Image (cartoon, rainbow, N blue to C red; front, side, top):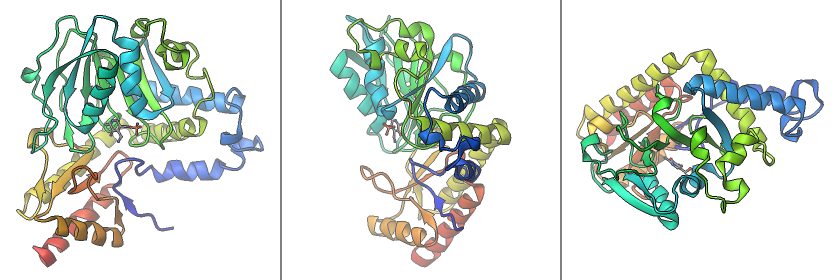
Length: 358
Ligand code: PMP
């Protein structure tokens, strides 16, 4: 078996142990005579998977009493709409930090549904960054303050979260479970699964239960958080196989220990930023204080060299390094499951590439 080092931003590298376990169980799940993806979402086998996945996420993320963990269809993008549908009441304003391309998309959806105040805007800044806490202009009595903890495209990550009277709502698609967070400070956290949690097909939502009660009566059942809290994410047929894979990934994370994985994340990113900073040939695109530990972004002296870099790296088994099509450059996504040896391989490739082209 030959596995590439997969630097894709999402769908992203998954733990080999989780893939192998799924492979072993794929055709006949625990002697049931069928795959878990063929099993009823209300049957014994799947119910155990569902419950274990919720329990593992609660433990790993550190979810306090009074919050629910939900699996919802439609990825993080559907949450861009569901959040204002549920939480932004008539006559209220929601504060949004515009930190980049993903925050911009969240803002667009919220503006379709209600009144939005842009509390800070650094979406187009180069070098890329997140706003400092003292830059925010907040609305008194805001329905919530929306943040994007890690801008996957620009590689800018919030290292701490602002204080606000309004509940914090945070898109953690690309850094959930990559570092310790205090869930009690947030009203709602959401993440598309396909980066740090498993394959695509679901968003994981952690919501303070009382917030779900705000939802106007006109919102359809499927789009109400209260429906999914009440039905334990089984209002309709859940994305069972995705949830099963998230369960295997959370089992893997429990075995590795979050402390170990979190410190390894800092070390992996540190190595890569050191390699970038040690030469003028490479230049990091994010302001140092906001450099992401998950999506490391940088440029080469020309677009031609960037294209060559990406192509030669792929030939050497280092895949998915092309920056997002909207910004170009290079992006190495190094989520929890990305192995440290892959970062070493990339650093050594970068040194060779520079000596041949620098
Ligand atoms: N938010 C962030 C920060 C993302 O990185 C992404 C996907 N790359 C999304 C939202 C959208 O996620 P999805 O494709 O699951 O809708």
